[in-house]
Amino acid sequence: MKKPSIGVSSCLGGVKCRYDGGSNPVDQLQTLVQQGEAVMICPEVIGGLQTPRTPAEIVGGDGFAVWQNQAKVITKTGEDVTESFKAGAIKAFAELQEAGVTTVVLKAKSPSCGCGLIYDGSFSGVKITGVGVATAYFINQGLMVLSDEDWLKKTTEGASIHGA
Image (cartoon, rainbow, N blue to C red):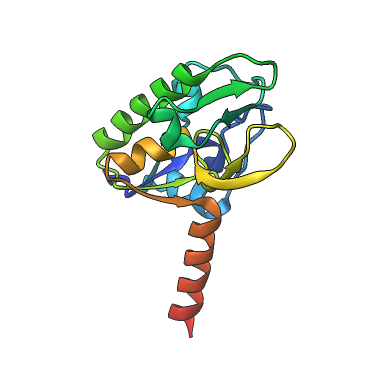
Protein backbone atom coordinates (compact mmCIF):
# COMPACT_ATOMS: atom_id res chain seq x y z
CA MET A 1 0.00 0.00 0.00
CA LYS A 2 1.20 3.48 -0.93
CA LYS A 3 2.11 5.81 1.89
CA PRO A 4 0.53 9.29 1.66
CA SER A 5 3.04 11.95 0.64
CA ILE A 6 1.02 14.96 1.76
CA GLY A 7 -1.76 15.96 4.09
CA VAL A 8 -4.67 18.09 2.88
CA SER A 9 -7.49 19.97 4.54
CA SER A 10 -10.52 17.67 4.33
CA CYS A 11 -12.63 20.41 2.75
CA LEU A 12 -10.12 20.54 -0.14
CA GLY A 13 -10.61 16.81 -0.58
CA GLY A 14 -14.36 17.36 -0.97
CA VAL A 15 -15.52 16.57 2.57
CA LYS A 16 -18.39 18.83 3.66
CA CYS A 17 -16.77 19.97 6.90
CA ARG A 18 -16.59 23.76 6.48
CA TYR A 19 -18.32 25.90 9.10
CA ASP A 20 -21.27 26.33 6.71
CA GLY A 21 -21.51 22.61 5.89
CA GLY A 22 -19.85 23.04 2.50
CA SER A 23 -16.50 22.05 1.04
CA ASN A 24 -13.81 23.62 -1.16
CA PRO A 25 -12.89 20.72 -3.46
CA VAL A 26 -9.72 20.92 -5.53
CA ASP A 27 -9.77 18.28 -8.27
CA GLN A 28 -6.02 17.59 -8.18
CA LEU A 29 -6.04 17.13 -4.39
CA GLN A 30 -9.11 14.89 -4.54
CA THR A 31 -7.27 12.73 -7.08
CA LEU A 32 -4.23 12.45 -4.77
CA VAL A 33 -6.52 11.35 -1.92
CA GLN A 34 -8.26 8.77 -4.15
CA GLN A 35 -4.85 7.43 -5.25
CA GLY A 36 -3.70 7.08 -1.63
CA GLU A 37 -1.04 9.77 -2.06
CA ALA A 38 -2.68 12.23 0.36
CA VAL A 39 -4.38 11.96 3.73
CA MET A 40 -7.18 14.34 4.76
CA ILE A 41 -7.50 16.13 8.10
CA CYS A 42 -9.91 18.73 9.47
CA PRO A 43 -8.52 20.11 12.73
CA GLU A 44 -11.80 21.84 13.60
CA VAL A 45 -13.85 18.63 13.35
CA ILE A 46 -11.08 16.57 15.01
CA GLY A 47 -11.17 19.15 17.83
CA GLY A 48 -14.84 18.38 18.45
CA LEU A 49 -16.60 21.18 16.56
CA GLN A 50 -19.84 20.37 14.73
CA THR A 51 -20.64 20.84 11.05
CA PRO A 52 -22.22 23.21 10.36
CA ARG A 53 -21.01 25.54 13.10
CA THR A 54 -21.00 29.24 13.91
CA PRO A 55 -18.21 31.04 12.02
CA ALA A 56 -15.11 31.74 14.10
CA GLU A 57 -12.16 34.10 13.71
CA ILE A 58 -8.97 34.72 15.63
CA VAL A 59 -9.20 37.83 17.78
CA GLY A 60 -6.02 39.55 18.96
CA GLY A 61 -3.48 38.12 16.52
CA ASP A 62 -2.95 34.94 14.54
CA GLY A 63 -2.40 31.25 15.26
CA PHE A 64 1.07 31.82 16.72
CA ALA A 65 -0.43 34.36 19.16
CA VAL A 66 -3.11 31.80 20.11
CA TRP A 67 -0.40 29.30 21.11
CA GLN A 68 1.28 32.06 23.16
CA ASN A 69 -2.08 32.73 24.89
CA GLN A 70 -2.14 36.26 23.43
CA ALA A 71 -5.13 35.71 21.10
CA LYS A 72 -8.34 33.66 21.13
CA VAL A 73 -10.62 32.00 18.61
CA ILE A 74 -14.09 33.45 19.05
CA THR A 75 -17.32 32.63 17.20
CA LYS A 76 -19.53 35.29 15.67
CA THR A 77 -21.87 34.81 18.66
CA GLY A 78 -19.03 35.39 21.16
CA GLU A 79 -18.24 31.81 22.21
CA ASP A 80 -14.57 31.09 22.95
CA VAL A 81 -13.61 27.97 20.94
CA THR A 82 -9.85 28.36 21.37
CA GLU A 83 -9.36 25.07 23.20
CA SER A 84 -11.23 23.11 20.51
CA PHE A 85 -9.01 24.66 17.85
CA LYS A 86 -5.86 23.83 19.83
CA ALA A 87 -6.97 20.26 20.57
CA GLY A 88 -7.82 19.73 16.90
CA ALA A 89 -4.40 20.96 15.79
CA ILE A 90 -2.62 18.61 18.19
CA LYS A 91 -4.74 15.59 17.20
CA ALA A 92 -4.46 16.39 13.47
CA PHE A 93 -0.68 16.64 13.77
CA ALA A 94 -0.58 13.23 15.47
CA GLU A 95 -2.56 11.74 12.57
CA LEU A 96 -0.24 13.35 10.02
CA GLN A 97 2.83 12.17 11.91
CA GLU A 98 1.46 8.62 12.12
CA ALA A 99 0.95 8.65 8.34
CA GLY A 100 4.52 9.89 7.78
CA VAL A 101 3.36 13.17 6.22
CA THR A 102 5.87 16.04 6.15
CA THR A 103 4.00 18.50 3.87
CA VAL A 104 0.43 19.75 4.22
CA VAL A 105 -1.80 21.73 1.86
CA LEU A 106 -4.29 23.72 3.92
CA LYS A 107 -7.29 25.92 3.14
CA ALA A 108 -6.34 29.56 2.81
CA LYS A 109 -7.91 32.13 5.16
CA SER A 110 -9.31 29.58 7.63
CA PRO A 111 -8.92 30.35 11.37
CA SER A 112 -7.52 26.84 11.71
CA CYS A 113 -5.72 26.17 8.42
CA GLY A 114 -5.07 29.68 7.07
CA CYS A 115 -1.62 30.15 5.63
CA GLY A 116 -0.48 33.69 4.78
CA LEU A 117 -3.85 35.40 5.20
CA ILE A 118 -6.60 35.05 7.80
CA TYR A 119 -9.63 37.13 8.71
CA ASP A 120 -8.98 39.90 11.26
CA GLY A 121 -11.47 38.84 13.96
CA SER A 122 -14.05 41.53 13.17
CA PHE A 123 -16.29 39.29 11.01
CA SER A 124 -16.26 42.04 8.38
CA GLY A 125 -14.36 40.17 5.67
CA VAL A 126 -11.12 42.06 6.29
CA LYS A 127 -8.02 39.89 5.86
CA ILE A 128 -4.67 40.31 7.59
CA THR A 129 -1.29 38.64 7.25
CA GLY A 130 -1.12 35.63 9.53
CA VAL A 131 -1.74 31.92 9.94
CA GLY A 132 -4.41 29.79 11.55
CA VAL A 133 -4.14 27.83 14.79
CA ALA A 134 -3.37 24.44 13.20
CA THR A 135 -0.99 26.01 10.68
CA ALA A 136 1.02 27.64 13.46
CA TYR A 137 1.19 24.34 15.35
CA PHE A 138 2.21 22.39 12.24
CA ILE A 139 4.95 24.92 11.44
CA ASN A 140 6.21 24.78 15.03
CA GLN A 141 6.37 20.98 14.72
CA GLY A 142 8.46 21.21 11.54
CA LEU A 143 5.89 20.47 8.82
CA MET A 144 6.09 22.21 5.45
CA VAL A 145 2.80 24.11 5.04
CA LEU A 146 1.32 25.46 1.80
CA SER A 147 -2.05 27.10 1.22
CA ASP A 148 -4.26 25.55 -1.44
CA GLU A 149 -3.72 28.70 -3.50
CA ASP A 150 0.09 28.44 -3.30
CA TRP A 151 -0.01 24.70 -4.02
CA LEU A 152 -2.14 25.26 -7.12
CA LYS A 153 0.27 27.97 -8.35
CA LYS A 154 3.27 25.66 -7.83
CA THR A 155 1.66 22.69 -9.57
CA THR A 156 0.46 24.85 -12.48
CA GLU A 157 3.89 26.45 -12.88
CA GLY A 158 5.55 23.06 -12.52
CA ALA A 159 3.30 21.55 -15.17
CA SER A 160 4.01 24.34 -17.63
CA ILE A 161 7.74 24.16 -16.93
CA HIS A 162 7.86 20.38 -17.41
CA GLY A 163 5.49 20.51 -20.35
CA ALA A 164 7.60 23.02 -22.29
